[in-house]
Image 1 (cartoon, rainbow, N blue to C red):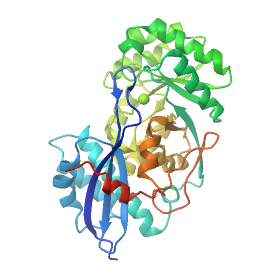
Image 2 (cartoon, protein in one colour):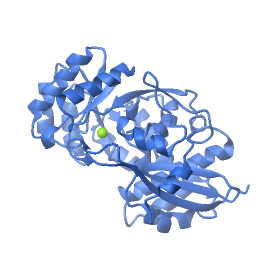
Image 3 (tube, rainbow, N blue to C red):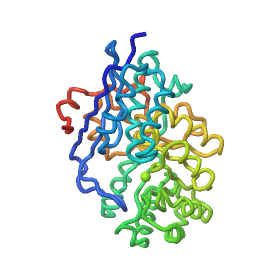
Amino acid sequence: MGHKISNVEVFYVSTSDCAGVGDSTLRYDIAEMTVVEITTEDGLTGHGITIRDDMAALIEHRLKPILLGRDPMDTEDLWNEMLLNMRGSGRKGLCLVALSVVDIALWDLKGKILGQPLHKLFGGSKREIPTYASGGWTSYSLDELLAEMKSFVDLGYDTIKMKVGVDLGKNIKEDARRVKAVREMVGPNIDIILDANNVWDSGTAVRFAELIKDCDIAAFEEPAPADDIPGLARVRRALNIPLATGEHEYTKFGMRDLLLSGAVDIVQLDATKAGGYTEMRKVAGMTQAWNLLFAPHCFEIIHMHLLSAASNAYKLEKLFLFNGIMRRCLKNYPEPENGILTIPDLPGTGLIYDMDWIRANNELK
Ligand SMILES: [Mg+2]
């Protein structure tokens, strides 16, 4: 064999091309990523990417000692050992983000060892995956919002996402005006997704939805806080709009709670947070058992492999906010054409990381 893991490295990188953009509950001044590189004794490298947060010490002190000397093919065993090692400090949140980015790097290595792209290892034959265009920030003026939504349609997307919850969620009448203006501009044949990013209580979310009930909304995302699962279930029952949630949920256990509560139609758990490919393949199976749509949050370059193999795939989320940082991190950043993302025909994740740029711009240490 000779594929034993010999090193695990963490990098933090950022670009400053999204200053001042905001949704109902967060502002973004820089685009930031964590990149992990796992190296084997015989010189192979696998990479993972996720949001940036202070996970380097977790990876260095808790996960790396488990990984050194091990076979990267053993993803199930390694996942369980890593989770149990961190059980006292967190089975959700940052610990899971750290585990996720490591797991993605292990699967990248597994694909390279076997000489197969991950979607083939998952059993998917499709390389062309539909995507939707995501932006429409609440920090935009109405004119800026309309201009961006038009630009998405002009690029060939048939599904677009905009944020709602302007003025920190205190102005639902203005939200309704913005949604109606976008619907009027794009006409009846474009699907519109609304994302409230956790801002409302369930009652306000239902009241807002009543204001836009003639707008034919394709999905209503995180109308209430991710942890208000009963509230999300209430919104779902009250409306004839599919409810999307899951980007702030972790592992198969979090998936179970959303399912048993009847709180979701479109499942958006994110492999870069919820447990990597190892856990997300199980999550995908659970969504199939409930006959729900599977539409992982953001990171389309990671999720394309999962959607290739999912019979209940909705669409990948193309978040335009990340274009700048992704174009720097990757030498072959795959970008959709007419809303279709083509999976690179390369082993593993199929992504070629620009490690020279990442090392030169590493903000860690
Ligand atoms: Mg969202």
